[in-house]
Image (cartoon, rainbow, N blue to C red; front, side, top):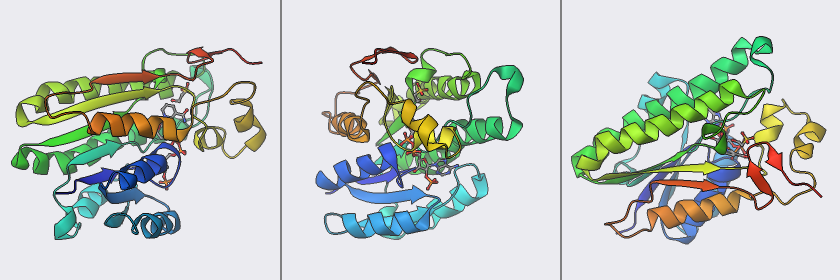
Length: 250
Ligand code: NDP
Ligand code: 8X3
């Protein structure tokens, strides 16, 4: 029987590429995000290959998260795969210059949002005695860099949550995969730098960054591993990147 995956942050970047990769592999899709137009467009495009539905919610709103996931049609309720991908960096500044609303957006979205969505999905996985949760962390969760303390903290939290989930959920037949990408060219830097296109473009200048599809390939590999195998933790750098902020540019 075809599997069902719920992907948060499916409207852009890594989430969107994962939706395409899953559709190609015959995995039915629950596509989530805050931009309905993009969700509808994606659901229509991928609906030619697999069954699709969309959920519009902000991961930071626990009540909305629970309501949206509870509203799924019966044929989408047995979620096999959860991809906790929604998230962003907001701003880049020394801790003493940090902005409260940026901090809230990162901690509430990247950390608490991931927890809310997981809670909404895990109970069903436990009942069915199976499931797979993919948490998108970052190399920022492995190594802190200057001016990135809060984003890095949010991704270190994701790493800890992945470890904790594995400890709590393995006994229920649920696999946990933590994926830590390096520099992937998506809308990420545009969001981080609040729409400043030239500043965002500079992040990826002079080297070949990762593509969203590279991360999607790894996610698909993890969900296609044999039943007795858990891909627990994967770090993926661009070939020219040696550490989060050490990139060899031409
Ligand atoms: P994008 O900005 O391209 O995509 C981010 C996605 O997250 C969008 O679909 C957005 O959808 C969704 N999202 C953001 N905030 C919320 C929210 N509060 N509620 C619901 N959805 C939200 O960035 P990426 O694809 O690069 O980022 C995906 C994940 O990968 C993030 O967790 C990011 O931290 C992580 N990552 C990215 C790296 C990179 O270099 N690009 C490297 C390492 C990790 P919408 O706006 O429609 O809600
Ligand atoms: C995104 C990668 O290095 O910009 O998580 O933090 S980085």
